[in-house]
Image (tube, rainbow, N blue to C red; front, side, top):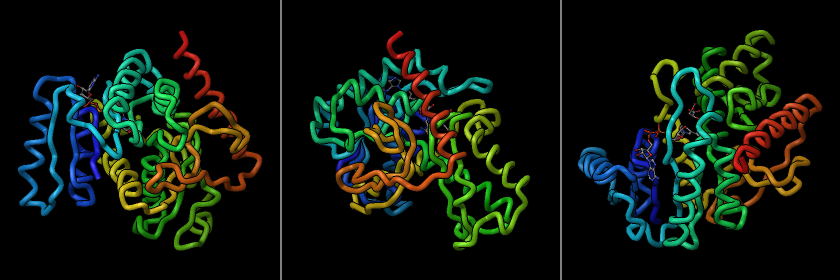
Length: 308
Ligand SMILES: NC(=O)c1ccc[n+]([C@@H]2O[C@H](COP(=O)([O-])OP(=O)(O)OC[C@H]3O[C@@H](n4cnc5c(N)ncnc54)[C@H](O)[C@@H]3O)[C@@H](O)[C@H]2O)c1
Ligand SMILES: O=C(O)C[C@H](O)C(=O)O
């Protein structure tokens, strides 16, 4: 399994590191536009191999996509991150051009690749990658829901004062401060609804904290987060590499599922060797359906900016 990671910045490097640490890929090629940066990150990471016990070969390249040839999976993290006080949507002006350019270069050298889009605003960037490459819809996946769900579980475990491993929960909808839909009704602690353990008010606080999870970290760090994003991407790459058929909420190009079409937005999907193996249509109640419609309207509004 050969994996390309475009963008050797905070998220790209974290993603390459977690992929290597999980030891399922033979090769990771990191690409960046900044001269020598990807080569430097790759060398630094390779010098952890004997310490951390992995055999994955990590190499770096300054914008030479021939090095990425025949990648099975490519992760797009290139682009600018937000600063405190910004929304992800404000990044579209710079990131759209970068994602479009990078996606075309990737498939030029790896025609059978599965692309995972990370750059923000992620749902719109995934949609753009579909439009720019024309790849079959199962081969472009946006990463957002896996991260948002991990943050939801973190917040739930904090509220219930229990280990995160006791918690199950999922966030669907757009990967934005207002568009995320943490499915509190379906969240459980060892199969028991979390509402049995905490009050409705506390659950609402968990919901709101989850939605602004990225903004909270951006305020603390001065730039956006990278450890959990890198870990979330590496889990999705592993699901493809090992054909795990694992369910992740992720941004999928919809064709009638959940009553939505021609939009990429977070819904549960089975991820395996073909990328998106299938989309899982769970029964939502009316309130959840309305939230998904509102979230989709907001993503469409951002998609509209691509034509501007
Ligand atoms: N979807 C998510 O859940 C999620 C999570 C975290 C971050 N992000 C997004 O990921 C992106 C990267 O974040 P970061 O913190 O790693 O930023 P960063 O600034 O640390 O790294 C971005 C890297 O992209 C490189 N780059 C820019 N243009 C390029 C091009 N044309 N080709 C190759 N490389 C190029 C830069 O040189 C830089 O090294 C941001 O848009 C951020 O908002 C998304
Ligand atoms: O918050 C951001 O801008 C980055 C990313 O989308 C995140 O959720 O961490």
